[in-house]
Length: 532
Image (cartoon, rainbow, N blue to C red; front, side):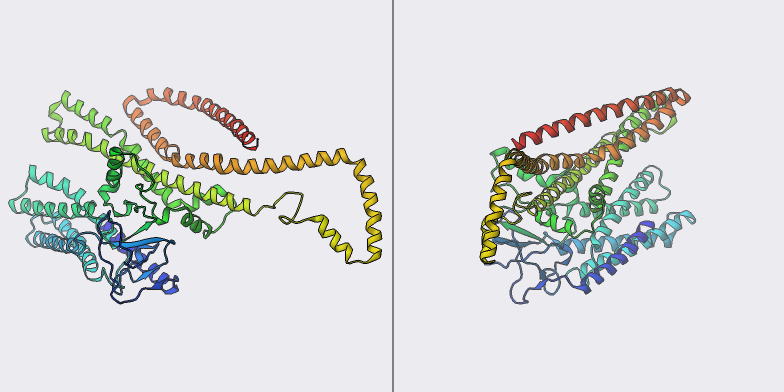
């Protein structure tokens, strides 16, 4: 019930935000309603040149026939954009509708007959009936309004989340009913409910994320990426890269066979989005605010991975306790522990992989932002610091032209000033030479600093952000869990160990400062080499 309530609240907020955004207008051009319906291509087929060209950065604004694909932006010059429709797009929603209707009927029968019990069983049946009625409304909206302008945004995410949680809850109930059934009717209803929930869960993780049409951009003959075509299972297992890995295993990859980036991940799109973000005083704080959604998701994955790191150890401890005392639990509990051993390790690998994948995305985006901003700043610098204000300007010719306009008195004044300037130049020749050398040195230093920032510093900063989740999320979680487990095992005897850990902390900080100092000297040497 709580999941359904949160889903309903989020849907209401999303609908209001989308209505306001569409009302303000976003500058899209409408494609004609003539015979320009995009035909679904194969995933690796190069589109034909006569097919219509369209693209959008916001996939939620794609509509067909007055609905999806009716609005589009102009594309990159020379690119071809084609729609890729998921197989069985409408059929899968129809299957979901029938399965959810069956679950509504199962919970209605359980409530009417009291198969789950009169007290707590009745409450469970009412809660299940309410949840599946809500899901039935969502699937009906997807089925009947999915290709119209009245569709509810991101409704697939809500149904997929509900299917996942309901399947996890039903697994425990299904196991209990198989072992200790309360009645034949209750066992039959739970088995049917588990089968239908498993079907819905399988559809959610095996079909394309969002179950929607995706625009693929073919730029200079380079194939588009497959990330936005992948299912949830393929996302979590990185199965969507299998084809390009296999192609690279057969023969070396060249640029024509490497997939293109998604439009939102290209440097121009990242820079455009970043420059529209409200500026703050600190660059680090500004970047944190800009990437806050990805950083939060990365931290959550890292925390989950840190907790699951200790799951195999705890399960092995429980198995050893059962071996010492078999009467402490039924034998089926032991089999449950054995099954959970590989499952928890697989889940830990998934969490670590997702956290690292998000970190690499942040890394590439930050590097694009830093290089782009540094390059833009370098282009705004003066052509020659301390020399000419305008590139290519001849100061002597400008002075002669100004003096020529002044007449004979200006000419005489110019001759007198030139004589004084020649004497002063003879007296101050060493100083001028020193100033010239200093100016040239400053220019070289500035150019070396810019090259150093773009080639070295930006790379170092972006690499730090790629693995920052290990420091701010995974390591604290593992430290906290290890302290709790150590205290449970050893009791007060673990306190000396905590004291030793606290005493070693300043030593680790000193090593970190020494590493930082060495890194600064390396960076200074790198800048000197860039200037030479």
